Every structure is written in structure tokens, then in C-alpha cells.
Image (tube, rainbow, N blue to C red; front, side, top):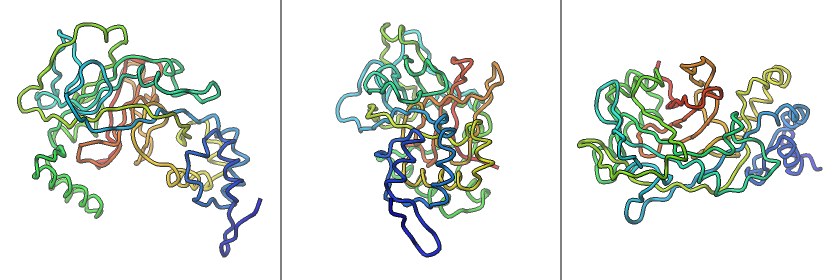
Amino acid sequence: HVEEEDGAASYASIDEVRELVHAIGLDPEALKLSVRMERAVHDSLSQAAPTLRKSVRSAIELELSALDGPEPTGPVSKLGGVPWLKPDDQWPTCKCCGQPLAFFAQLNLGALRGSVTLPPSSPPIGVVPELSRSSGLLQLWGCTDGFRIEDPQDPEAMMAAAVMREAMAADLAQEDIDCLRDIDCEDATYDNPFGGTEFLRLVPQEELGSAQASPTPPSGVPVLPTDLVSAVGVRAELGFEDSELREERWRVGSELGRFADWLEYSGGHGNWVGGWADWLQGPRYPECPKCSEPMTNVLFNWDGGAIDMDVPAIVTQCPKCPEQLAFLWDLELD
């Protein structure tokens, strides 16, 4: 192996980085290995590789494609549009303001899982072993009071979303950002994932063959543009918040943090099922209202889609109580 020099710093060769990434359980082909890794980071992580490998999960990568044609019916995976409902289902309402919720997304977990190949040696998709064979329709509604939907047909909404992103990018004081938008039910979303401003459910696979309604969104409810969702592959992810890494954090120190930065720069963000959450503010798994354990099983990581907050939206599940689901926008409001 040839060691690269750059002034006072030295870097591991591409071949050495590939071997390290593979030893940890990640896929070298999925990373931009043209990004250099410092020698100190490489040598420390080589010793920690066996422990790091225990914290690798598989994620099903999702691809979005704008709808070109009639709205699809049935329990298909999609963002926006109109949801699949049974004839006796009621459209959910917000417990904060009492208004009907907007439909955000539905994912047919069984169909997505069945459309990709997970090699026998791959790490588990989540902390619940059964998730690798899970089925059912994950559905998500949310209150848009305080949000602005980026509707291309609504210039005012597009302008409001652009102003918000510019304000956040400019690092304005929080009180100045607050003045740019209405914070009502939206604020309750950040403070309490169980505040009733979202509605989540996982419809069992056996119920998906039942009669289907032809729902019409209630008057005044925004309808997001429809994006069809398909699974395009499986990738391995390393989760740095895993409790098993605490000892390695203490021993490896800053090198582990620098590796996390390197992975983020070399990898990417997007939409996926399983794996680890794309936390921007650091892990903040909610506490299960039933057993009080952290809800660490990641069902869906969404990049926010047509909502004006350019931060990940994360659906988590309790490993002990799989019927307990939670939804969070990864943004702190202090």
C-alpha cells in the first residue's frame, strides 16, 4: 500500500480504506472512496472494526418518481396523493386543532422487502429481527397547520418555503425564524411525538386484500403531489449511537467522530426503510408510552418531501411493542 502525504498529515491509501470499510461490514462500492481518510483515523478504526461491525444495519433504499398518469389505487407505496383506506376507515383528525390531517405517505413494507435481494450474510434491517420478514402497510398523516406545502401551482406557498430555507441557512436567531411562520400544531410536533398532530398505523398484510374505499380528502386538506416509491437496493449503515460503541468512543476518541464525518461526506441522505436514522441534531428516540423503552427501530427515514422544513422526518418503532409507532421531525426548537 502506498501512503499519501499532504504536508504534516498522512492519509491511508484507497486500497487500505476499502479493506477497512469491508472489515466493518460496509460496502466500499457504495461510498465515494475518493474522499481521503487520515492515517490516524484508519489505524484507530482498524482496531475497533469488530465492535463497529456489531452496529451495522441494512437499509432498503427507496427511489421516488413523480406520478405520470392516473392516481394508483390499492396499497401501493407512495408519498402524497390519496391513501388506501378500507370502507369503514375514518379520515384522521388533529388532536391539537381538530382539523383533518394531510396524507403524507404509505409504504407497503412486504412488497418493498420482496423486491430486493438481501444476501444471507447481510446485517439485519432493524433491531427487531422480524422486520426482515415484515409485511403490512405503513401509513402516515400529519397536521399542516404552520407548514407550507410546496405546491408548484401555488406561487405563494413556494415563496414562503424558499424564505424559510434561506432564513435557516442564514443562521438567524430562533425568534426571527419564528416570526416568519405560524407555529401552532407544528410546534407540538417537535415537542411531543405523541401529541396527536400525526396519525400513524401499520395495517396488517392480511387486511390489505379487503374491500377498498375510494376516499376523497376532506375539504380544505392539502393534497401533496404523488411520488411513487420503489425499492432500488440494500445498503449497509453504521450507527454511531449504538450503546455497544460507548467503550470504543472512549478508547478511539475523536477518530470515531471523524470517521462519522467521513462517512456522512462519502455517503449521502435520502429515503429508506430500516437501517439507522439520519439524525441531524443527534439521536432522540422517543420513549415508548407502553413499556418506557427507547423506540430505536427505524421503520422509515424520509427527507421531508414537499414539506418546507428541509430536515429528515423519521418513523420509529418500539422493539418490544411493535404496535407502538412514533413520528419526529429532526429539528430542535428551543
